[in-house]
Length: 273
Image (tube, rainbow, N blue to C red; front, side, top):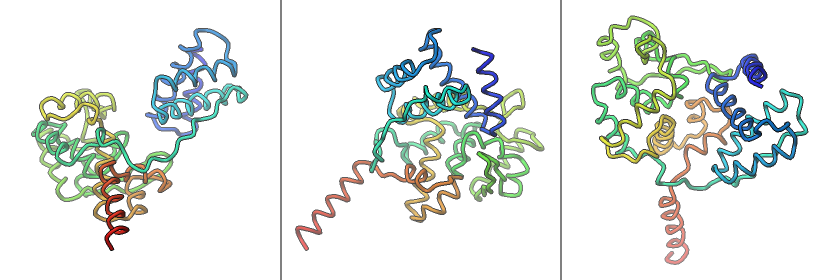
């Protein structure tokens, strides 16, 4: 089966899936095969796997893993074994306990002050760039103030705002003359898991809950901050590289407290005007 997974990876490459997608789909397929425990792939087994996921993961995570599994099953010619995703009602507010605040972000930056991680945090949160796109933040891009990003068959320009031009000082300190700014000792761009570990290492010093500290939450903070200022979801979708504003809406969902405040304002309007 490892050979089939390897062939599946090559298929995904031909479909021009991102490296992150390749890794995730492989991981999810292996999770299914581990659950299968050498039993033959049948519809009964994929349905049982779906039930297993529902018992252990959040609905969005379940659907994400089922998407990977269904892709693999179609590749193997087993369309009849595919399972339907969960129906999820769109949330109208987010869980406040998981949203990174401006103050918490500032504490993280301060805790990492003077290190590569400090500049990395500011770059993600200051541009809304994906972790997988950080390799496009090059010495050349910082010098001219903009990076050309190719991701998910789309090309867009990410401007590097003036406050982030402090990256030039960091670049000078590292001695890099070209190529990606954020690299490891081997000279290769930092990968997602390494950045994740670095960020988690800041939590105690910055006094920020670990559940809130991961790269994508910086992208969410960028999106919420931009939308609170501009209220332009179409422009925000362009900045984030989203094909649909429906995806962008997920990034602009307000907290339950904000939602409750708005409902209370409606009641005041109804009762006292």
